[in-house]
Length: 412
Ligand code: ZN
Image 1 (cartoon, rainbow, N blue to C red):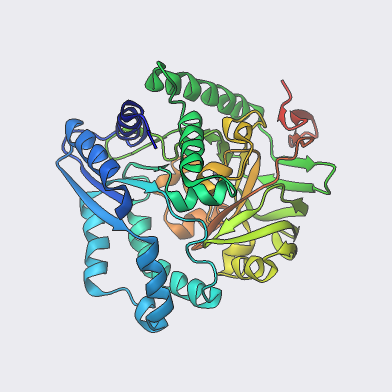
Image 2: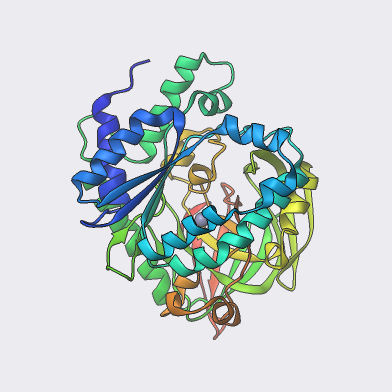
């Protein structure tokens, strides 16, 4: 299989420069699968060329991970060792630029005990959380993806490995706007400009609630936090003012709704891959802001588990708008990766909200953010509700309303 070296190095440059926006003197922490060592070297070199002080690698492996879950005791896996805590603590000192390259097999953890998986994840996330909270808003990060054979096979069953890899590479490059003879950095500048224009429009509207309706049964109202703003594309590291793109691709404009204030039913339009397992044809019904029931043709137990991971797991942390014309949607297949699939169409997330959407929100601690209406949880899981006929209407406190989406896309 021949994947263009030029496109790969353009991609590495795009991730380091436009995505993570590595600044001279910064420490970079790159998390990437061992199989992707060639791309790891490209990213590492680009980061040094951008002036990185040191690039630290965090090698990932689906295979090893699977073996750990299969053979090691739950208590052993659940424990965060002193050196791991020290590594987390070092992060609060270095404030490293974190680059994650996803390429995992969506089925990597399939067939393993889901209870064990979620308990291990829960206890490790609880230990990491205070450290993560401390660096929140104070460092740059970027998640991007690179195809692996297992991932490509999952997306294109029935194709040869080579064909599947070519198709997935083609799709990934398309969604991150890398094209033959095009200038990806320039394409991103225009794309970001458009997202920021729409966010500014939303922020000027003063909507305090949104109503969702579509033919599949979605009928849902969610309350917004009046002070919270809509954001899209990029974020700014408040330590150094560096503007970075946390997700590549990114198509969404999002905010955090008021936790505990929503009513009605949301029907998912795409399967959800969580912890390497699939939840399909599902809906979640909310009452007084909490998920009170859910139905899934496949993965019912998993969905229930997800919504009970902690107190905030049954409440919403994110509302996001994505028109159906998104290049991810146009690719026309499921990527089995939230990074892509959440950029296909409109979605919500249960779990952790974003305090950064509040004015001066990055300075709030968890208690203050919760008091302001931002949901707190160890999980953050997106699910897609952007039906082809989705209508979203925004309401203001004076009762006036404006169409935001009609037929799955911007009303104007
Ligand atoms: Zn989202």
